[in-house]
Image (cartoon, rainbow, N blue to C red; front, side):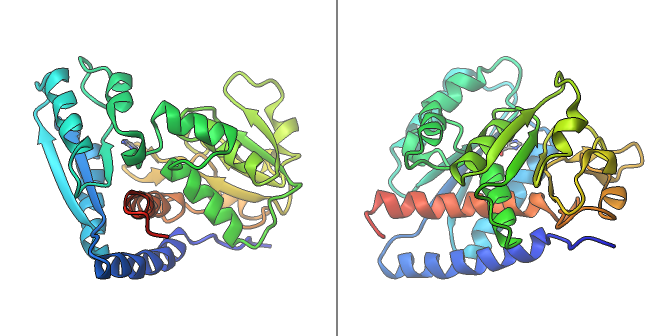
Length: 285
Ligand code: GUN
């Protein structure tokens, strides 16, 4: 049996349509949502990401500004730019593309972004609000993962969800969000003993460990929902997830491919966060 594909392109396209009509509604009320993206240096991957964020904004009618600083820029220059964007009324979301050059302090930069404009959901106050279940801007990839699971029609409540990976950007926030949806959550990581014993109990398995094709069918309970957050560049130049898709799809339930799975969801959730931030800034429901 071959599993159902969770099609990130199709899901993100349908969310995009909703966002676009919401943006039109806001514009009708005199508010155009605005996103500022800051790129420091010349990292090729970062340039590609920033380009696609800019394009997405344009397609959806969101105002966007891209600020490019040279890799030699000082921390003070970057903080001064963030401070200016914090005070700019036409900007509702600020994203500083990571990684930053080695001489910069990423934490100090994230901490400097206004909490209500932190569309990455990386600011410690947004992280804390996520933890205690208060309203916050949710980190984009984890929010996309939850949306994809919901759209499989599987009810998360009461399920055993196992997350492989404990990063601040994916593993930890995904675990918190799954728990918020009333899953029983187990977090695994590189030091976990007997990982298979745990993952084979998972009704929902989220993999964000950063190792190409790490998860084969021996890790997976038949019928489980499998979400692959991995993006690994192979020696042949191809992109591979953390899950051995061809192997696992023979026994799993709904499963995400790479590419075309979680990837397209991340940008669309960023657009959604920008829309949410703009609505909150102007008291629009
Ligand atoms: N670099 C890679 N992914 C991300 C992301 O989600 N946000 C930011 N700011 N930088 C990144």
